[in-house]
Image (cartoon, rainbow, N blue to C red; front, side, top):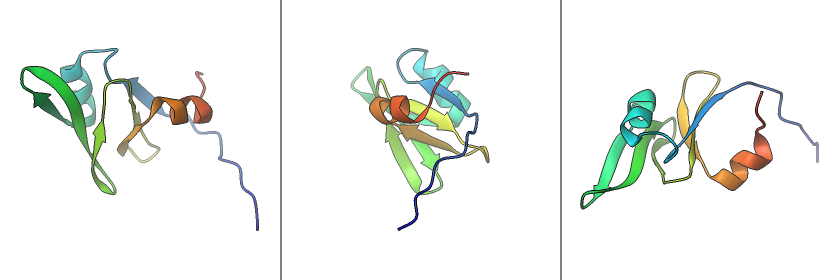
Length: 82
């Protein structure tokens, strides 16, 4: 089995809950889902269909301008600040 390393690529990312939900949803073209009057999640159109970004998750804009959510523990293992 061959082994590979991810190429160093800079991405843009924003964390759900650290900024205004409306601002993040507008940035990624996402749809805010409410649980009563409280924010529940942001639904994002991805290459694989709609995906959910919960409070604390990161939303990443990929190298081709696509958006997708990423759980904080995966984000911390994969990315570092530049």
